Image (cartoon, rainbow, N blue to C red):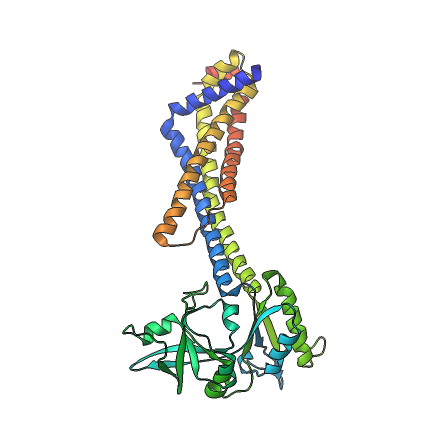
Length: 410
């Protein structure tokens, strides 16, 4: 019971001391406030960026796999992957027949040129694929129809059009459905309009495209008989590594690649891209948080400095208290409580300020933010530990004063 009364009295004494120097106490807390607010804001921006990247990759197809020709040495010279012709329809058919962890599969060929309608033209990319490509890339037909298997077999000159191409070609607001546009020298009839997807996390416009049957692009536009790539979708995100292994084994067998020999293709997954981009974001978040954490360090040094000044100013008071029976532990706890109260109050204000700043960043700058509860708790815990750490030494010094010398101090 005595210990509880003593602790209560120590809190009262500490609060009275802080109340007597409000402005100085506020200036001391300012470093903590700025530090906590900075850490919360930086973590919110970092976590928001990471979440935004994940959402963008999810929109592209989180379990999407991309198979492309690989660069190989020919005659001692490494060839550019884009010039390789290692992927064939036989590879596509083998994957479709044998891969158990693949849900959707599409051949891929593409060409970049001018799309022309009337007096308007715009540079864009024509993708030659099959109907499953839309499921893989999470595209949807907003209006019109998707081309059929009959269109693929007959090399039909039909296409689906993205919003960006519509805006650039159909400037008078006319409906593009049923209209003919020219891509390079080849006319295409627009049979469908794609839903807008906007820009992805890498800044690429996902609406600046035309989609046509891959056979049409192969024969009528590019005049080739090989595939520039194959797009696939694993049955789910967890199955992506198994699907990658399956595809690699199937193509190696098809290409008669011996064990240990260099592959003439490469398989990439969205999981790899996601890991790479999130690791970069994590690194930036840690860097920014460390910079913001310097403010907490400065705030802690400010607390130690003010507590030193407080010990010096109240030396006689300390001597009087000790002469009437106060023990060293009581003096230690009194000054330690003052330091913790300063950092605790600064932490609360810093949390409020940090959350408010994060919301303002989202509203004014339009940046994605995500305030995680653990980041608030971490900032608050760090500032409390900072108060204890930096308040300990001045409090220890106060507790170690000689009562007689302290009373005589001028």
